[in-house]
Image 1 (cartoon, rainbow, N blue to C red):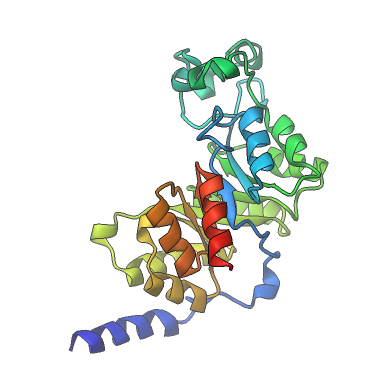
Image 2: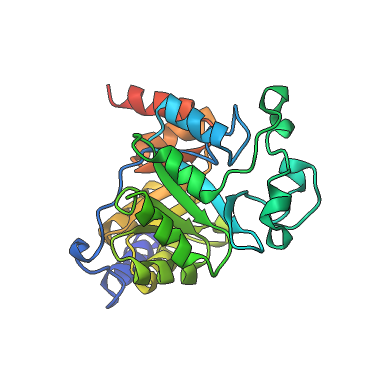
Length: 278
């Protein structure tokens, strides 16, 4: 009886009209990024800085993720938290800082003496760093209202067909896709796995991706199982995952065939992927 219930549940997802995405031709090609360095190679360098970006490029990560805010005077810059205290020691909100103030702060000292004096990385500088390399930018939007600038700078560096834009806020991605249909976008999502089933999680993803008009999702890795991947693969959705640092978890995800793994330890993921390919 349990097996029959599972079959019925799976079938209900697969046959409900509108829950399978349209043909892939409406979507841009998905840039290949099997290993994405999280905030750059943040295990060894200060996150969201040019140093961490360069370390990601050096180690051979195919992608490097970073987070983007805007200053009060309109300059896009990299930082993860909504407040600058953890990375700079200065207690000021990202949405309340102007660029002259930001430019005086030290974004490297918290990681170690060797990085002392690291200046803020602007979005423009970050894209310029990845231009011409084998490491593509994976751009996480942290606030609304900057979608036009996100796209404009990607055009400036001819990175529209190379970059991936990610966001937890589906409406931001929907706007990005409307502005630039040739730009790949992935919806960031996390679930309370104990309260969900693979079917219920996949159903929400399929519905949201259809609304955004994208075929890529970036899922917190605890949600990923072979069954979950199969449902989304059958629906035409590519799965990326975040943020994986444990060797055993990395190996399991590689074995399951996850297309893209975001990690603070890109060296470990690249090693596991290389070993699996032998």
